[in-house]
Length: 339
Image 1 (cartoon, one colour):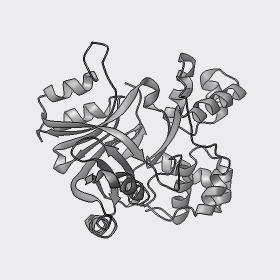
Image 2 (cartoon, helix red, strand yellow):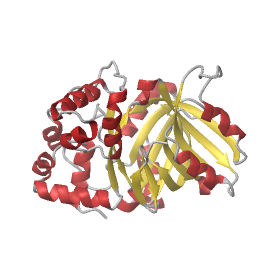
Image 3 (cartoon, rainbow, N blue to C red):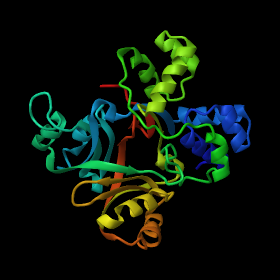
Image 4 (cartoon, rainbow, N blue to C red):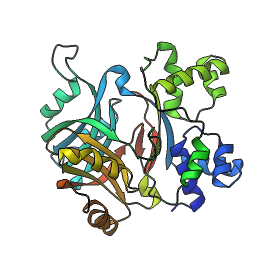
């Protein structure tokens, strides 16, 4: 379990992933050295990783949510193989280990071989392990209303920052990126690789990795971040933070209520992700709970009162395989090297 100070440090990192330890300490109320020490301990233990990611839209890729129902005795090799692919963003085993839920980054339209869609999406149904597959487009991610740039993430693990403390931490943040997205060049590759490994890599270290000056690193980071090309995420293992029941909720919401319901749910501390999708269910939620009773309480007291929800389906996660940019091995987050 996290201490209250650790919980506030995590929330600060989610609000401002590259904020200096000194500023985080001032907001949280501890020394810069304490913040650095606690952060390094969480990272070393594999509970936390800050990662820099390139928006897949830069390369014309959308995000597709796949539900793959498999032969139980064949699911493990397929799931492990998918998790190691660089075009897979999230991967989990659910429904007693017979279902893989993953997010695939794949382009729209016609592929290089003249067929529509991506090669992976075409090959999956032919796998001997697959019984059934549904693939829906992620149409729109809903952000927490109080955090329009989307850096704050799931915060149900403990006491977070107050709105005033968040303003003190992020007061100099630029407005949300308006584009156009910048296409990274070959020269950016070492910079982006270093940030994918550790999103808090210092300017000095980035200068060493790229061979650039510190000033050039700062200018290029500012350009990539302000355009929306470079994003940051905070990967966490909820199980290591006392939250052992994770589930995906598939909701069917009346179209007239979709925006309002999505925005409302995105602000719930139990929700790690909310997004509008195509298909029979039009809203997908990632719910993080302490145990079955905690999950039941959420369903009956937080979700049920919302008008416009016509039906829902639940997939209980039994094993987490991959986060945004981290593989999970032996209960630890590890760097997912490009494949």
